[in-house]
Image (cartoon, rainbow, N blue to C red):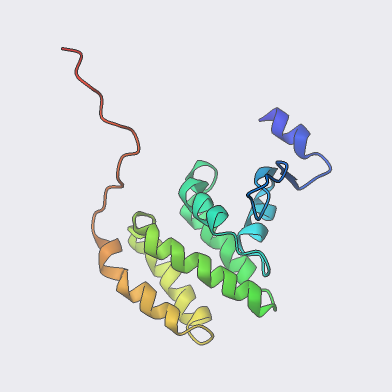
Length: 152
């Protein structure tokens, strides 16, 4: 952890060198603020980054913390940033149903969508409502660890 702090001293984001077949450089280290900015950037639509971020964010954020970061970013005056935030939320709701099984958290998200997003992006409500029944189930995420083999 101390090495990462030293690596970021004076910088908010560090990239790996761009490879020949890459459109966007991969992030080596970044502050949370810069990760959220990259995730919702108005001109960079990096689907691989978005999907990777949504799969791994649990290692350093709770669902509530991520949601708060996205809400804060949504307050931007830039419509493109708002659209990117909605796009991330849409993907998160569609692919991360397990994250929304908590009734209080889901209600908080629904309030935000109803009060902030619905008017500007009405089609998002369809996505959220469509996934409502799925996310209320007592879902168990699929294991990423292969089952142990018997040594017998």
